[in-house]
Structure formats: structure tokens, C-alpha cells
Amino acid sequence: MIDIKDIIKPENLVFKKSKVLTDMEMHYCPGCSHGVVHNLIAEVIEDMDIQNSVIGVAPVGCSVLAYNYLHIDWHEAAHGRAPAVATAVKRLMPDKFVFTYQGDGDLAAIGTAETIHACNRGEDITIVFINNGIYGMTGGQMAPTTIEGMVASTCPAGRDLKRDGYPIKITEILATLPGTCYVTRQAVHTPGSVRKTKIALRKAFENQIAKKGTSIVEVVSTCNSGWRMTPVKANNWMVENMFPVYPLGDIKDE
Amino acid sequence: MRELKLMKGNEAIAEAAVRYGVDGYFGYPITPQSEVMETLMLMKPWETTGMVVLQAESEVASINMLYGGAGSGKRVMTSSSSPGVSLMQEGISYIAGAELPCVIVNVVRGGPGLGTIQPSQSDYFQAVKGGGHGDYKLIVLAPASVQEMADFIGLAFELAFKYRNPAMILSDGVIGQMMEKVEFDEYRKRWTEEELIKNNPWAATGKTPDRERNVITSLHLQAVDQEKLNHKLQAKYREIEKSEVRYETYMCDDAEYLIVAFGSSARISKKSVELARTKGIKVGLLRPITLFPFPYREIDAYSEQIKGILTVEMNAGQMVEDVRLAVSGKVKVEHFGRMGGMVSSPDEVEEALEQKIIGG
Ligand SMILES: Cc1ncc(C[n+]2csc(CCOP(=O)(O)OP(=O)(O)O)c2C)c(N)n1
Image (cartoon, rainbow over all chains, first blue to last red; front, top):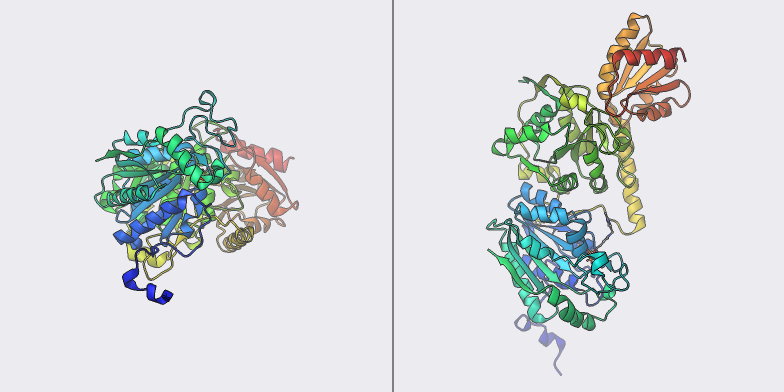
């Protein structure tokens, strides 16, 4: 019989929780992408050794409590206004790392103006954009990114393009702005995609050192509760239905 | 050495901000206060004091920039006029809820709606009764001269940081646009990072190992916690009411009647007092300088001595409600005001005093 103590040894350590993550239990639903992305941001902050000099701007949405999970200084923002808050934080403390963390309703509906103008000014910030195609926090209403035919509580028969307009590809729009330097779309549904997203996040933070402009990492995400699907089914549904509308990969890298 | 200059009220705001060592100004153009940002852009303070000046995409953005700047422990301010300040209300509520200091200047114009670009005082309720959602108060200062436009920048920041509460300078198009001579203090240095952290240990400046992380938020999901915050806010407002009332009196010692007016209406009413005095009417002027906290007790102190109060405001009668509260029925209180951008003349006010208070 091997005793557990024989296994827990430094030389056997293959993975450990980032010290930037707090011990607080996350409130996210099982299968939700938010927790995975939080973890990646924590790892990037730890790897870059910037915990002392990073300020996160949390949105209003499911990730409103992001500040409970990462052991860094945080700033709340009103729904949609994180890029404006981050603009001032960065302008007034240009040596700090500043990022916003926003959902699709936050970034692409109520906060469209703040998002576009922060990017257009080329603010040296990182925008992490969780696109789950739905309003998670308020109970699954239609988002600006809800795809055609997708069911939400305010479009129970599916998104009707005539009535509701088209799913907005805000990331492509942001890539057209000279103020953005790095615009990419990733996902976190497989180990491989998680690794890629981490690399993208690292690059998006490193761009702040060179003051190259705004970096945006969109993460196409699942919302099991909002979509009314099991985690596995949600992942498959995302691959089949969301990826054709929101194809993964770098849109801009300068 | 104080320096003497001739300038507009709006320009004085800009000059005073740079001299006071303000860290950031964020704004969006709107008449009658666009000179504030224009003056700052000409002054280029980023080259001298290091102050950031940024034209935002909207007042929604500028107030949320203030939120970010204030949470960083910086001295940040914005200026706007009525429609713009309406847009800011959500952000102001967040700033009050997160207990952050900042300064907001409202150079009021006539409303409602797009209204006029002429002066008004019709945003009194919005400024002193809350304006945005939730139970909160702004510290509200009402300048009546270009000199006070300049002086109140420093005072507003001092009070804002003392109480960690947003402060508003409630001005109007008359004072914003008129030119007067104004004396300025010497330039003060902006806080260094060390000074800022020492003075504002709560600021989100990056979590150093020597302290817990700082989280700037107005969110308390548990109702008991949110009520706790509300109790704390209310206690702070009571403290402000106790300690920070500011007002000025003119010819009140022997007064049988009182005019209560703030801002440019007080300037006009001063002339009306002089006019009435030449007719033998014993009237004095009480000018609230702080609108929150309001000089309730100080006005009530005249209740025994006087026979009536006329409030003069460029609105349909807003501060009059607070004056009535102050004297709670002991003295007759009437309102006189022009609206929608019209400014009353000293004669009109004197006439109103005779008709509504003395004759009425
Ligand atoms: C001014 C304002 N309007 C509406 C809301 C309600 N609200 C809170 S979160 C939210 C939508 C969040 O959706 P999203 O940004 O996509 O983030 P998710 O919850 O899906 O992560 C809404 C509409 C609010 N808090 N403030």
C-alpha cells in the first residue's frame, strides 16, 4: 500500500492552483466558461509576476463578483462602462496593468460606445470579452450576440433577424479600429483551446508593456443555465452553432 | 502670493483646477460650460503639473472615467451642464455608493429637455435631493462669483476627500459666462504615488504584499450588508450636516423680512435688498453657500425676528421647499423666480417682495 504522503511530494507536483486565485468558492454554474477564464487570467498574472501592479475592472453580469476570486485590486464598473473606468485608471497610472472583463451584453449592447471609443483611442488596456450569446446574470435574455434562431427568454421562438436584427460581430468591428493592436477570438472547451486562450491572454497583457494599443481577447463561451443544456451538450452546441458565426483565431495582430 | 486675473467663471474653474493639483479632468462639450475643457486644452497641464485632460465620448463615459480615477485615489473632476449631468446620474450614484471623492461642476442651463443654453437654477432638486438612484447625498456648493468658482474647486476637493463623497459645484450660465477679476493661489504639487497611497489607503492602486486587496464597489448582494452601508452613509451625511454648513448674510441684523437666494440669484437679490432699503423696507439677504448641507437651523434662527421670507431662484420653486422646512410654518415663505433661462432683474425681485411678502 502506498501512503498518500508518499505521493504528495514536490517532485510529483504537476499542477497547482495559482496564488493569484483566492480560496473563495466560485458561484458559477457547472460548465460555465467564466471560471476557466478567471483561472487563466490568474495564471497569466502570476507567470508575468504583475500581481502588485494590476487592476481589474469587473463588469455587471455574471462576473460582477470576479473581484472575489482574483487576489488583486479591483474596480467595479456600472453595466457597460468598464472601458471608461479602465481608461481613467490607465491614464492616471500608466505604469499599471489594467484589464476589463466583460460579457456580451455589457460590451456589445449597453457599453458599445465606451468599448468602441476606448479601442479607438487605443487605450493601453486588455479587454477580456466573454461571448456566451446570452444575458446570463438576468436569467437568459437575448444578447446582441445571440445567433439566428437561438432561443432566449426574450426570444422564446428563437432570434428573428427581421425583428431582432443580426448577431453583432463586435470583435471584427473593433479590429477595424487603428487603436487596437491585437484582436483574437478563442474558446475554452477543450484542453488545447484552454492553452491557446492562455497564450492569447499573455500576449494581450504583454502588449501593455510596449504600449501598443488596445488588446481584445474574445472567448466564445457556454452558458449552461441560460442555454438550458448540460455542460457536454452546451460544448457541442457551441462548436456546431456558435463557431460558424464566431470563427476562432486571430483577427488582428500588429 | 496670490495672482490677479480677469476671466470667465468657466475659465476660472480650469485655472483653479490646474493650480490645485487636480490629477484628471474628463468631460464632454456642452454650452454654457465648454470653456472649461477648452481652457484646459490650451493650458496643456500635462506638460506642467502632469494633469490628464481627456475629451470623453459622452457624459456617461466621463462620469465613469471619474469613477475609475476616483477609485485610484486621484483628484478627478468633470464639468457639464444640465442635460449632460442628467446622463451622469447612474455613475454619480455608483461613486456615492462606493464612497469615492470627486468633483462635478454643473453650470446649469434652462430645462426641461434640451431646453435653452441660458442660465437657470432648475437642477437644485437633482443636485441636493439625490438625482440618481438610491439614498445618497452630494456635497453641493453654490458659487455666486467668479472668485468662488475658483475657490470652491479647492474647497470641493477638500470636503470630497474628507468625507469620501462626491461634491458638486452647482453654478449657472451667468457665473460660468461672466468675467470678473479673480485671485488665484499659487500652484500646488500633485500628490506623489507615496503621498496618494498614504492619504488614501483604500485606493485600487495595485495590491502590494503589505496590504489586503482593495476592491472599489457599491455592490453588497446581502440586504443586511447593503443596509449597513446605508447606515454608514446616513451617519456620514449627519456629520456633514453638523460640521459643514456654510452661508452668508447681508443686512440681516435688523431685518423684518428675509430674501433667501443662492448663486447668481443671490447677486441679483443683493441689489434688490439695497433697492428696498432705500424705500425704508428692512430686508436682509441670506445666501446658502452649501446647498447640501442646507442651512436649515441658520434660517430658522430668524423665525422670531422676521415677518416673511421670499426665496429667489431661477426655477419654479425648488429651494423654497427647504426654506419652508427650515421655518416649519412659523413664518410665511413665498417663492419668486423666472424660468427656462430667463434671469430676474433686481426691480422684479424687489417688487415681488412687496407684493408677495409685505403686501400679501
Ligand atoms: C443600467 C443597467 N441595466 C440593466 C442591468 C441589468 N443587467 C445586469 S447583468 C445584465 C446582462 C449581463 O449579460 P452579459 O453582459 O452578457 O454577461 P453574462 O451575465 O452573460 O456573463 C443586465 C441586463 C443593470 N445592472 N444595469
